[in-house]
Amino acid sequence: MVKETVYYDVLGVTPSASEEEICKAYYIKRFLLGKEQVLGEAYQVLSDPVHREAYDLNGLNTMVDPRAVFTLLFGSELEDYIGHFSYYIANITIL
Image 1 (cartoon, one colour):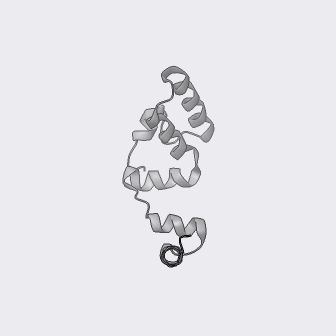
Image 2: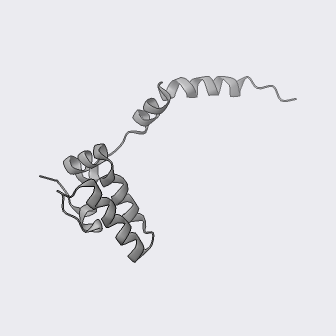
């Protein structure tokens, strides 16, 4: 059972739609409506199995912690980089 069906409704598919049905619905809607932000968001979330599962469980209220994203991308804590950066900024000699 899904928590919300907003993105499914935007694309005009049911929560049990396959990836192929979602893709087809997206391209048909995009052709008919043009490029709209909510249409792209719906397709981006529903076409990725991981994002789709998170959306089905949590709906649109899924919040992402920016620190978690930074750690995921760069493999370290944000403060480590800010600390190094501020150290270099403080020790810059202006010629």
